[in-house]
Length: 451
Ligand code: PLP
Image 1 (cartoon, rainbow, N blue to C red):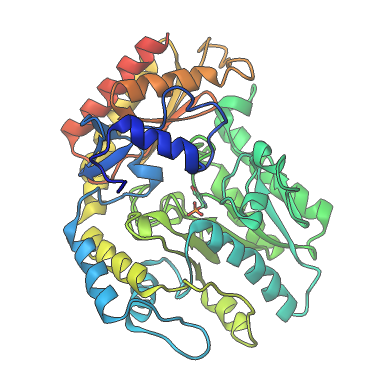
Image 2 (cartoon, rainbow, N blue to C red; image 1 turned 90 degrees about the vertical axis):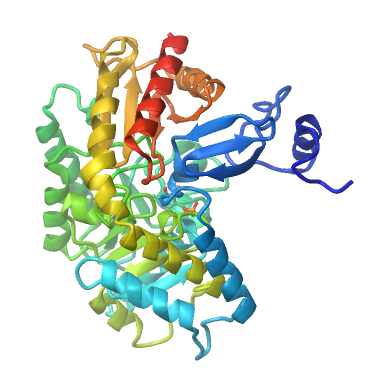
């Protein structure tokens, strides 16, 4: 049989169950119902194989920033595939899409992040970062300055390096992780861990965990600190305002490279081109992926400041991927950036979408199940709680409340993800106010049905 959209859903699901191994999916989770088969999409709506229209509150996996169905990107890919479908950027060659994309990114990035090392994904970008910062200090005569500090409950990818940097305990329990010389400090999640402290006190206290770790490990041992400007996959954890200035001070004081993982926050998600701009930080390196191509083609990379790039360029950095700077992915990314820029999508976020979403989203805080409702730009979360006043959390294992809520969303044709007992959203940036109202109405209905 030729397998197309025209096969009955049950047949597609049976083949899927027989042959397709799904990422981050528990055995038995799909038993008896199968995975929902998504067949096409346009704007902020997905269509499944039974013809249902689903509002995508997650922009895929936090990536479809310009929304679905933009022909210009398909045409850019086809044009590039005909002209030069592949060539590498190793061994003294280059090509126009990689040159043009690198130059464009240097123009958009803050500060002197003027250099790009391309990768195929966010995980690969972070693997590059681990090797690059260690090599950097080694070239500078400090090979022992190789420990990278990250945060508990961070997400930096699924490769050995990315998952090691990440602070996801269930990931570390599999595959002998983390790799050596990665150190984790607590996250700035005031709602869950702030106790009696005010958010501002807590922000300072959590930032000082970085200083404590540096002093314990030794300044001469710590190469870099990596963090997401706003933790995404960990549940859209927004640090108190006092946190980032203190982190910046500590990195400056101890000569620690600051790596901002902008894989989610980049390309407009927080209301600026990069989350570092929204949070007021000055990274030496930024990881990028996802919104770089709005997910239309797999591409990622590391943006690197002048000084680090100069040190790395002194010798050979023995690192690279077959698809580093892939011409088709680069052409798609360029077209995506053109749309973000010419259609003023980030202005739309700042002036229209984010204020509207904030008002609607924070309105959910009056729901009996909802503790805090947080939002930065176009990424938001609500913490589900059995007792608001006490900032109580559902008992461990009862991440199931989140799971039930997610399933109620799905049944109401809304994609909203759950992370333990937090529900998160990250819709396409081009979403309209009317669509935002629809999203939040469906979320409220799902919350009512979860009660
Ligand atoms: N870094 C962050 C902050 C992410 O959110 C993700 C993916 O969700 C990654 C890295 C990994 O990117 P990828 O899945 O493209 O490897």
